[in-house]
Length: 441
Ligand code: GLY
Ligand code: MN
Ligand code: MN
Image (cartoon, rainbow, N blue to C red):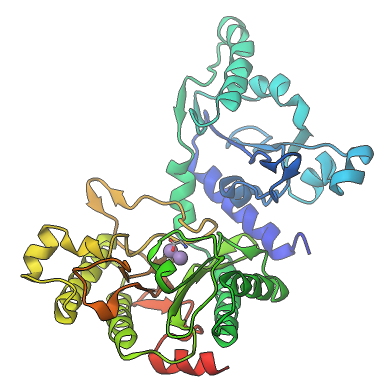
């Protein structure tokens, strides 16, 4: 299950796209993620850096990738070598053989030889795409490798060694922003699994169930339906917990009469969905909950319906802010002129986060939001979230009492198509009627 032919092809396609954008004399160096300890000797489950995954598919630690458009080592890797003793503890390794035979590297060496070999492989490279100044140890290794060959390069070979460093994101993140058909098939599957898990949570919620029980149910569905697990820590906030944006303790009991907000997305083969639904614990919205929920839903749908190629990314947030502010005035949450409330940012009292972000291998995926001083325009193949919300703190005496302690967010994943959009998460109920039906199970 670890590696599929379609994926091998996809990584090769990504790699070729990167190599096509590099000129002779340029190269790209990527490092894998470190292990991180949770406590004591216990490690977090390993997740590879998305940039390195994107061009290689390599999921194991202690790895570096060098891409060079000239020469016969266009795709070179340093990886953990086969080691029967270590493999007893941590599992079978692909080794250098696997890197070449299965992952398509032109050459692979053991990870431990990186420092000794890297300098030589950078002879003739004047510009290195390398994410400098993020990891001092990696920086030091790269500099030592270059220093080791500089003298010979300059005095004997008359070739350059890297003297200019460019962030790999300049090339890679632009590519990652536009999803291929293969990537879209993975995101669709992530969205399908995520929708089913949210529906399961809706039907399982009731008075006295703990937030962590819904979190566990969602995890269970993600994994039994074929996903890797959550693409980010799930948020399950009952009642006023929904007003804490990054609430992940998930430890309180749910109470009939409250809403519960769940922000959870399944990661499927390294691509994640990002979905929020808010629903009544006992399955029926109260009148006040309906008012707030319907406002957020109407804004969400209006934002989604505005999506088309050429639209400025920032206009999604501008539209959400305008419509939410108008709605807040109607519901008595804000008082005053809508334009003034927007100018003074008064809407931030109840809507304090952005409306959209790119989505892909990372939940807050890579890709510039602004280019040449203006907001990015949407193009077919881009995927992003739309996630307006309103959060009324329980002790906010300025808010009408009936809304206090309520938090509502609705979040879907949207693909820009040639003539509009596709809601990847359309299978997850969100109208009041459909949500109440899902709660009934
Ligand atoms: N789940 C994180 C977000 O919605 O941005
Ligand atoms: Mn999101
Ligand atoms: Mn989310």
